[in-house]
Length: 299
Image (cartoon, rainbow, N blue to C red):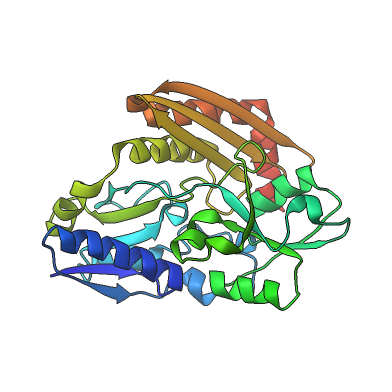
């Protein structure tokens, strides 16, 4: 039997159960082991202020390394670009919608001073650039908690990943989905990461449902993030698509107050995904991204 390590949130368990179903269809018996992570324990502080990479993965990766689990299912945007020795990104299934969604009211319907909630520096920075008249406040918690806070009137709108809402059957709550050229998504957003040791039954079982185009796209995005030296809680966005073996990548670096926003694009062969991402990251650093990120880290 394969043991799948997962966080205990509603969305994380949906993702783990989906992977378990895919494996079961291939004749693999599975059970899910819930692991509480550091990020799950810190609920009263904005994630950007915690400043630790691997907030939602460290304890899960320890379960893999200790052989208490055969594979782990993560939201790929939570997975650090550098994995612990002995662990690999075994599979990236086909991606759900990578874009960000507005829940509550459309941005155009929000008056000046309207309160908007987001837990993401990346979303907040781009929204401040787009609508500097809005009041943007942090909102933490799982998806259902954030939606409850919206329903209680604490915010007029909140920004969330469209993928999570769709996976949990809450797509009908989306007021609008923001185009990637308006709100560049997080690295890996909408994709799942299946992490295993580099050998063994978990690795072999998961290789069979890796989606090549999605894997290449997220490798480009992660290459950009690695070059920028950022974690998942910094104002960096990236979005790659693959069509006919060609990869297109958009990268964004923004100051938290939205006053500066750098955008760059690159294109090349999907087989060169990581290199395309690295080069675009270096270009963004040279164009002013380094100064922006240094200011974020020293704040």
